[in-house]
Length: 242
Image 1 (cartoon, rainbow, N blue to C red):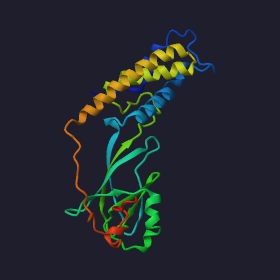
Image 2: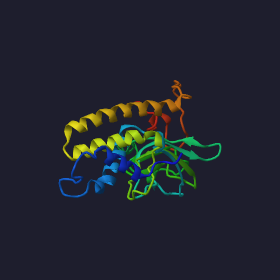
Image 3: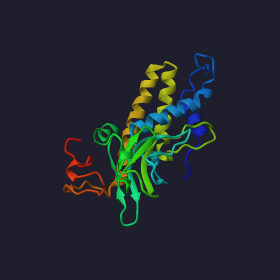
Image 4: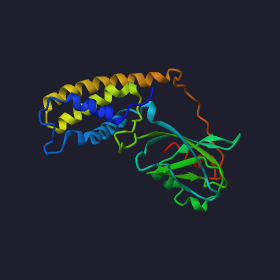
């Protein structure tokens, strides 16, 4: 089933608040002119509530020899919410890269350009960029699984990214926001209650899509990945004080 066109959601939202006689905002603009803005804000708020399956994306890119910094793929309408994991593809030497925060990394390796290049084992995220360490010594493929923010809708003829099973949730959220904008607080409270109930149901449904997974404990491995940073007990990816 195709995803719903934005204009259909906007029309339904306007129908829900149709008993407002003027059909205009306090600034005098038509309520319909606020439709895309209300939709976008509802979609952005929804993405902050739960990393729904539609927002989970996979991207691939390649490294460049002797290049440390890489930009995460973004567009003017969509950005990363979070990185789930980063996999370096190198045949039988492929590995999941370990994430280390910038302040932790720089505490031990403030200037990685002085270290030997090699096969990366760590990525350091900062904004829409990542640093790899060791700095790559060759071309490698990186596979990134990430949670994205929904694309900003700029045209009501476009389809949203969420599946139709969330249309009722999105419309109730839009209606709630429209009524809050119009300062109709009693009506807004009713629609907020419906939105909250639908959100809870959608989150439960989304999480039920991963029933094949269950947590499993793993033993500690002190050897980890091999790269030239000195003795293993000084390596930043296994130190107990990080």
